Length: 368
Image 1 (spheres, rainbow, N blue to C red):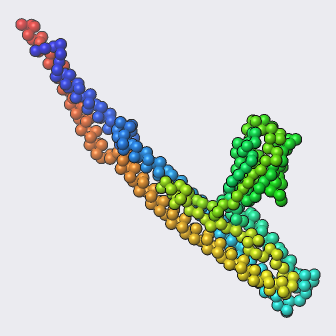
Image 2 (image 1 turned 180 degrees about the vertical axis):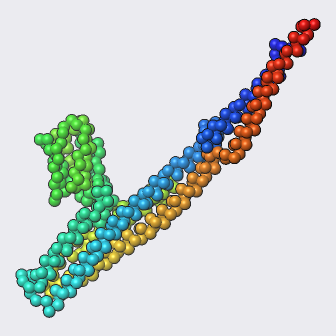
Image 3 (image 1 turned 90 degrees about the vertical axis):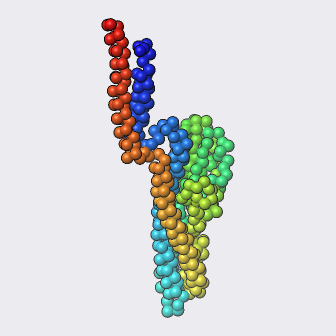
């Protein structure tokens, strides 16, 4: 019999320590609901689960993008339908003016009233096109998706970012000095206050251009600089996927939507005379065809985005299910392990106590 080294007690203590560690691990999993609470639980599984989690979040945002894109298209569709109705009324007016039963001309009579209404309706078409916007970006003037493609502002002292928010494709010239800064596209000019040596955002909201400056900007450092906005090759693109083809199949591209009077081809028409009305009728028929084409593009894009959104929701569900298999704990299985380890811990504690009592037999020998 030996008392300096109690092998039985050491064995019991070692087994108890392992069981207590397993019990603690089970408690962590049961309390968090996760099978992987630290990298050591499953390093490979954690890497896969994290990738799936990132993909799921990206797909969720892509689904929101699709939903917002559909809302954008609803706005464009509503405005297009309104323009369709105005063109129908214009065609009705042109048909009336083209007939000899309508008296008068541009200066008096029925055709004067017809021409006045025609002028008002074409002005309303232009106003509708200019004010149909989503988050500050015009949708049906052909400039949606336009980007800043070149700028001399970026080389100027104090300017570090130039942004377009619905700006029309054009070259914008900047004039600065004496505490003011203005920008123009040759037709519209907007002036703001420029604070030299200050970080600021110069928001030319009438033109859809904003310029961010830092503390190195001076009163004249932006003078004579230009901003070039180029129309996109399409009517904008929407990120509705996360497959890795971020410049390709993950995007849905919208056809350019342009319902300006020049595109409709009725900007120079007149209904003041019968001959002019007959010429206008041909142009109005072409304009109606343009509107029908735009409506078809909007409808096709809405349907495509709707199907993409359905697919995204299915993908999110399946990605989440796969991540759950890897990351989440099976509560029933883990509870079984916890119960077993808890019983073993109690038994181990009892056996350690018994092993510690084994040395008491030595006292019997010592007493003689």
